[in-house]
Picture: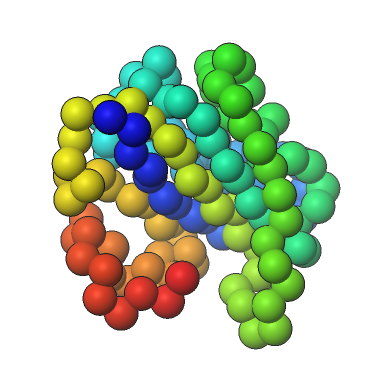
Length: 129
């Protein structure tokens, strides 16, 4: 069965290093919290807010042992008042887990996007994203 895992992290600066480090942290946390081997990852879709354009977050995917995973990057819609400086990800994984067993990961300031998921709660009440 294929499941989607969502996540996001704020990036402290629009630099190659900051985007790479933040994306790496997010990916590692998602894999760890979901007890996933990299072979379980089917594909990834990464986005950045329009203010993050120094590099592609896909380089962090490649740099973390996922060089054979299909990855697509895009820029988020420039919504007025939206939280800036974010990398978001949707990872498709092959797993036997149920939807409510998936751990979506929102780190740093990005945790404000999905307070319903803070602390591992996968309820979708009060969703802001």
